[in-house]
Image (cartoon, rainbow, N blue to C red; front, side, top):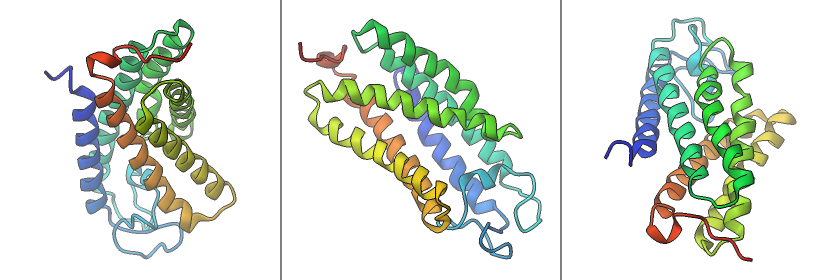
Length: 204
């Protein structure tokens, strides 16, 4: 039972722990070092992983954020490995499997002093979702086609906003792409569990 719902369990626990961490965050943001608490529209999630909050206070919520990211990495890793078992195109099976194993490590690194190295997980996740989107677009899973495209667009919007230093919007878009990605992962896990979708069928 746990194995069957492992991705769902990991994602839910991860979100709960991140929220707990945010509630315990002392304060400070890139725009206002004296702000109180964690602002979902004013802070990046990575602020939760620092020993010291931006306002200089000890970050009491850090431990919850780190544990939450550990569950997050397991959830995404298992997801990509599971998806690799549901497609019939051998060329992509190993790619998704390797992305899954790599994400066990790289996603968790985001919560450590090796944060910059951990951001590789974003590239890997985006590439994995791109492959899955390509396969879904060739299937008859019409709702998932729409969800996949929307999810990818939220990633690209974040990169654009962050790259051009629109920080106020980038703060918000980070949460949007994170939520959309989690919902897509859970949706793919659910809809591809049915017997008819044991292998993602593509048009000839």
